[in-house]
Structures are given as C-alpha cells and as structure tokens.
Length: 142
Length: 473
Image (cartoon, rainbow over all chains, first blue to last red; front, side):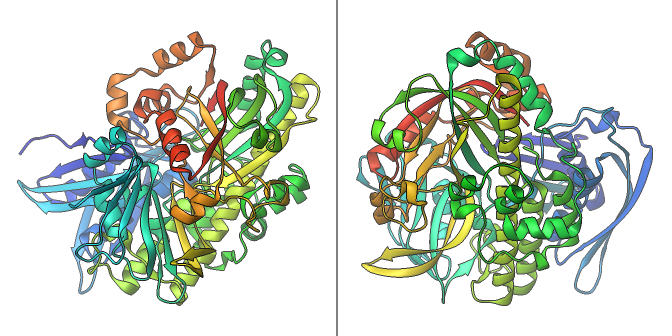
C-alpha cells in the first residue's frame, strides 16, 4: 500500500484519477482532495471555515458522486475552497449509504489562485474497490 | 469489434450483440487510429443499444471518448418508444458558438487589438467563480429560462435581429424551469453573463480564407482581412446541475443495471421524468442563449468605445453543441418526429428547412467549428446531404487528443502565451494553467476534422478565420 493519496491517469478529454485509503473513508477523503487539486492547491488553503455536510446514495458510487458534487457546489456558489476533511464517516443503512463529514477550508476572496472548472462528476470508468485497502477511480468532466 | 470501411471517410460498426441499429463513424484513416485507442467506438456501440433508437448511432468527424455518449455523438429516438438521456446531451447543456461579423478590417484594428482585448476582458466577466452581473431574482432567472436570448434583448442586450440569427430563434419552446432544483437556480443566478473556464473562449479574428464566396457573402463575410468575433460558452453551473440532478433522479426511478454504461441512464421520452428533464434541459439551453446574447452585447459596446462604432457588427448565427430536441427527419423514406441528441455536434441543416432563418433558407445554415486556442476556426454551411446521411449534423470542434494532465506536464502557460504573441496573437486569461491545458497541440488538427466534414458532404467549407486576440475564461 503506497502512502500516496491519489494519482492522475491519462484521459483524453477529461480528468481521471485514482484515490487510495486504508479505509473507505480515507479513500473518499482523498478523492475529494484529488478533485480539489484540479482547481486549486488544497495544501495551502487556510482551514478557517468548517462546513458539516451530509449526503446519501443508493450505492457507494452514487454516494461518491453526491459527496464530490457537494464540494463542487460549495465552490461554485460560495467560492469555498476545500483544504482538508475531518471526521468523515460512511454508514450503511437499510437501503442507502450515508456520509457525514466536516470540511475544512476557506472562502476565496481573490486571495487564492483557483483555476480549471470541474463541471461535474461522471460515472464513466468509476470504481470503488477493496484492494490493498480501498481504491477509488473517478473521471470528472472538465 | 467488427468495423467496416464504407467509403474514404465513413466507417460502420454493423449491428451486432445488443445493438438495435448499426453505428456510423465519419472519420479518416489517420483519425481512426486515435479512435481505436480509446472508448469512442465502444461508446457508439452502447448508444446503438438504447431503446427506441432510429436510423443509426453516429459519430462526427471530431469524435472522441466521452462518458455515456461519445463526444461527437448523434442519435435520434422514436418519440413513442424512445428515451431521452442526460448522458446524450452532456453536462454543459447548450455549450455553443456565436459568430459576429464586422465591417472592420485587420488594418483598422491592428493598433487597437491589445486595447480591445483588455477592454473585452474588463467588460466580459471571465474566469471561474467571479460574479457576473447584478444579482438576479429567482423570477428573473425563470424568465430567462423561458425566453432565453429574447429576455436579454428585452433588457437591452443586443438587437431583435440577433434572435432571428440564433438556433431555435434564441429560445427553445417547451422550456419550463419549475423542476429546476434550488441548487441549479443558485448556481445559475451569479453566473449569467460569464464565459466560464475550460475550453471556453472569446476571440477577435480575421477572415483568412474564403472557400465559397457565395455562401460567405450571404453570411456577411465578404473579404480577406475582415474582422469577426467568436464567442464559445454554455449554460455554466445551471446546466451542469440540471444534468447531475436528472442523472440521479433517473437512476433512482429507472435504475441502470441493464445499461451497458451507467452514464447512459435515461427515461422514456413521454414519461413524467423524461418530460421534466426535457423542460429543465431546455431551460438551461435558454440560459446559455441569454448568456451569449449578453456577452455579444458587451463586445459590441467595447468595439464602440474603442473604435467609435458598433455599426456592422451583426450576428452571423449562434449554434448549439450539446442539446436534445425534437426534429423531423426522413428515416427509411418516412418523415418521422424524433428526439435527437447531439453531444458535441452541430446541427447542419441545408437549404429549405423551416428551422433555419429566412435569410439562410436558400444557402443552408451557418455552422461554426472552432479550432483550438491560437489556431484557425471554420465557417461551414449546412447541407441537404447531412440531412440524408448524418441526421442533419456535423462536427463541433477540433476534439482533444491529449489529456489536460499530459498538457500540463508538457507545456508551460507562459511559454504558450509567448509563442502565440510571436505569431501576432494576443492572449488574456485568468491563469497560466488553463492556457497550458488548452495549448493547440492537445487537439486534433481542426483542418483534418473540417476536411472530413467537407468531403463527406455533411458540412461544406465556407471560410476560415484566424485569431488576433483570444480571451480565455
């Protein structure tokens, strides 16, 4: 198991990445950071503002789409830049998976460089696998 | 996979397995090689498996791998038996291109091109996350979704004749915003009047070649050196949200287990959810028309301020690249009402079609194929041949051949900008990263794409325009 959080793979039209984690939660967190890295340098974002989020999905892939889209929405509408994630918990309920997390980040007031507009999260080539821990693969539409 | 070459620029995947119809790919020997290397052909095959598909599943000359449908994918579905799929339209609903012609010549603006570009950059809000215009209310947004470019003209952005020179006359019938999610509304409100990032751009160009003087004349393009302005953008976050919302709703209602690709989730055209998607997608289409209408207005203002007049800055046309709509097509010798999906493809109607404005009814509609940043773009004319062989469609752009990631490894934005400057092209962008990602080398050669369209007869070359100034979102 590499300690690498995520890596980008070749994809002609869009951006494709794999994210890794010892747990499913860690892999989900790293997938969010991978997506953020397409738009800003999440490592330098001050953790000034906390946002609690909750999303659900009928399966893990739908949950992943909902989770990443939540971060995209906060960026698109509020200029919220993700810098880290705390307390990410995924729970399996009877018919759904639920995810709760606290996002740490800052609102961009022009003090950060953010570029590259991720339009949406696709199901194309999406994988959520238990493999040396967990491995997630996502193609985002740019 | 069985693949048959039918003619110099046309291949067919014969009906096999679960395919309900064959798939047809317009390409060349050279470009076919890159298609074989990715999922384009498999995605075309998948489209051919969808319920109610008529005629064939098509891939246009700029086709490349997408998600669900390939980019450059065109398919028609039976109104009764068929489906409608957000994956057949894409996330950037009504991403499209508007072309303005002017009476200015390159010699008139040569001294002012930097000033023009700076002013455009100031007046046309660019870049991700920047606010567009004064905050709209929900009611305003609904009106925009219903009336499209017509709303913008009513507000004083542009002229009534611009509407006539816009696909769907600037407003899709049947748009109804009542099923837009609050998120779609929230994303739409601050983004009206913005270009957005990625491959979107605004170019000040000059006519560099005229292939078909007669059609060019009808389009208002008369001479080499004439200045044109091209605007390429879409429905922004509102469109993206509509696509995402309905993909989820359709998954929840209809499931995706029988589909060859989850991204092809769909609903029957006549179902409640299918209709709601169509009404919401049409709202996003109209939002994008209004968006380009406002940007075009600001460009005219800038020309007026810098050069003294906006006279002669007329709209040639405005075309959609990502859309589903109802059209009549002759399939197996029978006129049929179909729900056509064009994802990364341009309508290419020839002479006589009632959907195109009277001024173009003898020539066919204008079609614009933007090249990559810093390279030529083309003006084509729609053909009756396209109506026979490609459901009235042709290419929409150059089509990428290199990933953004690879582009960032290979190119530096500063260097790309400098190289363009050496070619006499001014560039303004919000960041260097976006410039590197859009370097011209990452695209297929647009000349080859256009040549395939021309030789196949699905869109004929009229003129070529080259950039003098480029603004990237």
